[in-house]
Length: 497
Image (cartoon, rainbow, N blue to C red):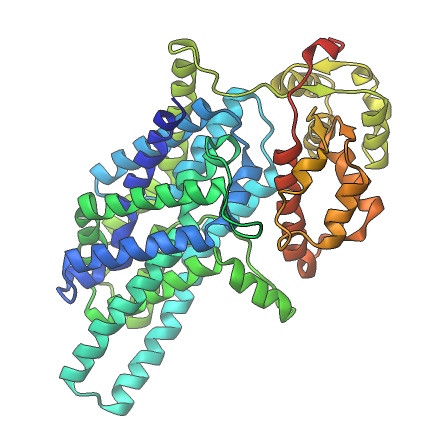
């Protein structure tokens, strides 16, 4: 049953491949510089490489937006996003899989009563706004650069044709790698928290995680979509929206691929961090938006009105409609899956307010004098807690914090499980700190975080400034691994309802 429920993710991957391959190779195929089969083969290989090697960064962001904690729920989220994409592709609108997935996750959050992290949502939406603007700027700069090179060096037409063809192949490969790295989270990110796979340890230091396994099969489904159904959208990008020549097509793909890579590459982020330079957040962005931004930048650089604004308006409307449409589909499908097919689409979150939680809220500057109605209470779902907080007019910026610290998440630090942790990913100091609390139970995630932070600075988060963004993300990733490893079932008999 678990593997059947993954089929919607594979369907979404197929839809993404059908929709987004045109953004990478549309210009090359429509100008007949590269055959479709060649483009599809190169795109498929590099999408898989990008997904497996660099796909982890953006998936963590989606998980923070909405942690879909039941496999039938993950199935429904992916199916909803895929259906919205297929409808848009049917009408030749190259929309964003990122927007479809985010819309579906928000639909799940509303249905399950889960709290939506407004900070993460704002980060994602701002990245959507920045993407076409950044692509347009890069395209304008590259247009003038390549125009100067071609005119200054008087390259022969045959050589120029050869270089352009080779360039289209290279930037297509790079664009496909960036597409896989950035967008695999859209395909399989909602399955990470409910993955049916187990980590496979090849040696003590080499293992194939459940997440990498998800990314691999998701990337294969994207490749299948590229081969079977991407030719139609290649025509929209490469011909219908703007008349692209081979050289301008090269510029458009290169600039849009760079933007995708900036929002996806953990390695680039590490490099920028080591040079004390600001970094962009690792969030799934739209390859369609990047390409459209590049085409607009090209139109500005060439000072031409050749762009088809009617088609552009149709595409822009799809960007607005798509997440709303996807969210509505998800909400309706969740109702049917839960009530008609009797599947658990979410695991209710239990929130307890004992003395430890109230003290923690006080430390975190939440006004507990207004929260006396919570003391000693237990809520069986996030929606139940949310209704109470709204009833007592608790500020929205405190609601998320209250839900986070009261969430019941039993943990037991099993000594034998500590031995399975990757000794290269976790430092010796971090592993030693875990051994010092072996066989200890915790009721909440924050209790374990606070305990480890006191024992060792290697487990502490740093101040939220851009210099420490990468460091804090790595620490958070390590905590997510040990939360999953040491989690235990909730004992409902011991709860005071």
